[in-house]
Amino acid sequence: MWMMNPMGDLRMRLIRAAMLTVATLTLVVPIAGQARPGIPRRPDGKPNLNGIWQALNTANWDLQTHGPAGGPPILGVLGAIPPGMGVVEGDEIPYLPAALPKKKANFEKRWTDDPEVKCYLPGVPRANYMPYPFQILQGSPAILIAYQYAGASRIINMGKPTEAPTDSWMGWSNGRWEGDTLVIDVKGFNDSTWFDRAGNHHSDALHVVERYTLTGPNMMQYEATIEDANTFSKPWKVSMPLYKHTEKNAHLLEFKCVEFTEEMLYGHLRKK
Image (cartoon, rainbow, N blue to C red; front, side):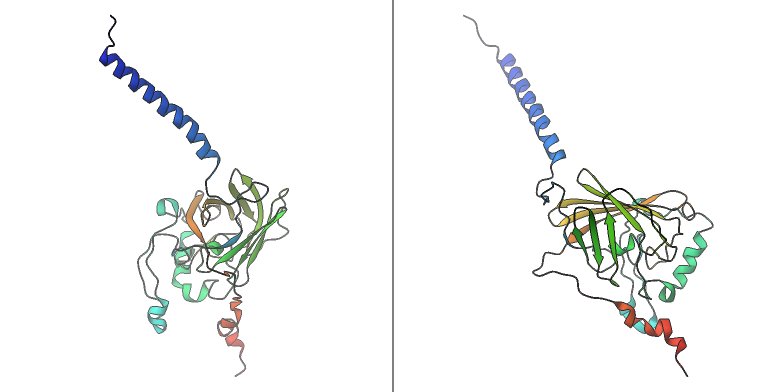
């Protein structure tokens, strides 16, 4: 009578188990890669980015890792700089030697010369990590991004790319979809904005490529690749999560801050 070999039977069971595992992974991995569970979508199948978003970090003070520091003495702790982890890949901004002195000079004069102090438009990518919310209004031919700070806004052209008619504070934005990621190519900047309160700067040759990727219904990964051959030796990147406001009746409030900077901007013109 033929007898089953116990070791052979065990070996066959292990082989079948391994084949089942491989088959399961083969089925699961492509599905996970192609469809993000829990991502809200519009009728056209694109991720739904509509909502009010905000960064929760200290990048607006300094893009690089930094410790706490004091502000103007008259403000006490109200002007203190909070410590924070950097959002720059590699935590280093590759300045050209000729551009580094301007960064240091900006830092020394940051309490008076930072465009934010004067309520000027913040530029890109800074507008996305200031300590204020912004709203994405996603349409078909275009996407509007409205910022609470200074009433700044951007219209993202989602059609055939167009050229900037002139240089501006917020640049000229052309968008496209790469899978589930919104990619925005921004050019046409002037040289007047800073990246942060630490004085990091750029020229009018600035080119920014942004990437917005939903990672859940209320969270988005934001990346911006920064290129400026007049200021940096190579492109560099910042990345951070953005969080969606989910409180009841969340909406942007008006913050046209020029009225709070009148003394700084026009005080010297006051008739004595």
